[in-house]
Length: 326
Image (cartoon, rainbow, N blue to C red; front, side, top):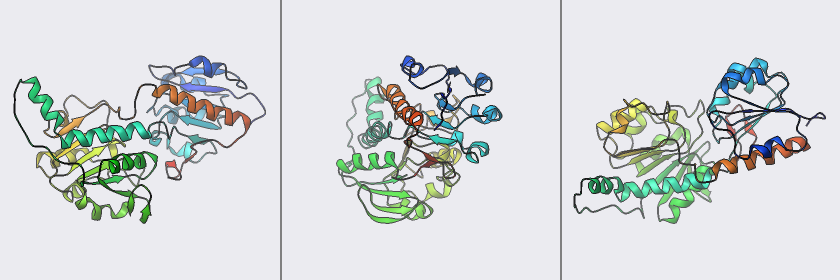
């Protein structure tokens, strides 16, 4: 892509990428500079490539005027909504993400949540802590219907896992279609309301875009079964959080498992911590042992392609906010 040795900047938070020496020693690179959000503007001038390791940082928008030679931004996340500011979107800078690293771990996590709800594992643990012996009957998962919102690689991995335990799975994506290998039927996102009443589990695995922000609001929740559960492993802003709290309090739906939130960490004062039927986790659904090393491996593969002038993996359609295909 360039005849000169590109300079790389790594935007990081409290943690640096593992195996940093592999990045520093990569052949063909010029300088490698590491910067936290408050120093990014100082580090960007003259940089050709930027690795965003501070996973949800919005620092690039503020430092953008200093990105005078930037040609490529790689995000160590699947979601890139934090990067879709007008300056970057309108530029010629290529954006890539870490699609593929989190698919199977997130699918396993969703499977675990579905089983936890059906078998009331939170209730069992609560009774155990109180040394209370209380027999209960639990639910079957085979034959239940899941609606997976988001038909990219993460949504597809979730569909395959749930199908394997006997659930029927339907997808909601950009375009309607039949005969999909993982979902069977996919309804268009703008027809989501028609699919919600069929679902025992509504699973959100969509990217955050202008079209999906606030997708699950009071009207959507009212269309769900009173026995249905909502699982969100996508982005917090897919759900109108106040509407969800109201729906849980009124028993409009039976429960929710939330791994992502409007603002993270979730405030101590949030009612979601204590509402019955709610499972709260700290944005960890894709984070399995070794995930950081996998992120570095993917970045280094793309760095080699960048230096060789070869096509990059996971190029984001900046107008849409996600990688095309899948």
